[in-house]
Length: 402
Ligand SMILES: [Zn+2]
Image (cartoon, rainbow, N blue to C red; front, side, top):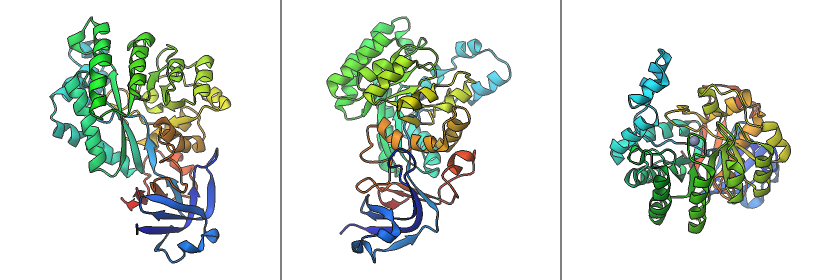
């Protein structure tokens, strides 16, 4: 018989329905790796009486947190560049001396799998300390087959070694590597015809993404990739409308995209397309903050249209060296004006949807994975209110205390 645990005397944010789905004086039964029952403690069915119990002392239980957009696996960092810019050096000079994404690509290419894994697992463990139990990680700092494979393999390995669910996303169309300088069309063809099918055949790809932007790839190039992803049966998501409106969100929606991410320049047409397709709007306030952007995503219009909104860290070495999902929730409220309930939904139920895993994680409901956080707080708004200093008192991952 699988292991059973009864959590009693809890206030529970189930995230069922369209708000917190709160239960006062609640209880949860964990059986094996899944949630077997949740409800008011006084309604606990007789079959669960006598199960080993843990008193939650009136703390709040939430689902384990989900960071649905990260670039967590990379080698090196860009602190030196950060220092040089702060000291007044121009970006162009830094780029000429090999800075920017080029430096992360070369560090990632040069790292062994063990080195890449060790550097990345530090960041992952910091996120896990905050209660993260599921994470998406994108490739895109290899830009050649061997290194993209290494990044995705490291992500899978972290998922086996750490108590966290991982989802891999292939982001070959992140930038044009130096070997293809001046030959962008050839690089797109290489990604679509060679890299994606090979990595998919090795079971390394859960979803496909691209950087659709005037400084990235065009909508037509993105569509070539999406067509191939569809042929292979892979879901798509997209970096869209971050710096300009390329109408990428509508394209992602047309391909049944799981999510369109960033969205500072999203327009009404994009919102309507996302709504119709059920595509999640993933908001990334940490990148907005680091880049000192001024135009915020159309949150009120997304809210009115009923487009589900998720919040993620976008953890990456360039535009978001932010190793904190809770800080991202705080910024979603302060910078993007989400409510604390929306921000919490953004890292649970809606983040699960953005990964295509809403039937497995993101809510506290019978049948879902028993990924749970217990917080010593007075109300769930505290998770967004504090900037720093917050962590769960207990975390369960797949039914086991972590
Ligand atoms: Zn990103």
